[in-house]
Image (cartoon, rainbow, N blue to C red):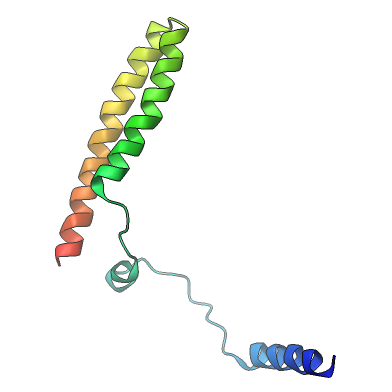
Length: 95
């Protein structure tokens, strides 16, 4: 019990003696370089496809042609956005 008490007291003192970092986080090139880019282009686009396919099938089952058209347009738009973002990510990784 005494060891646990010392451990918690030491942790509390260390936290009090530490200098606080009140600077807001910055999205800098250095910060971006530390973030691992773990998802492949194919995985991201497959996830997007799966998500929209499920929604499209639900709309198709209810014969909601308006929803199907909306989902089709939204899918193509989102796919374009993701491809642009993935191109930017790939360019950043090559740097």
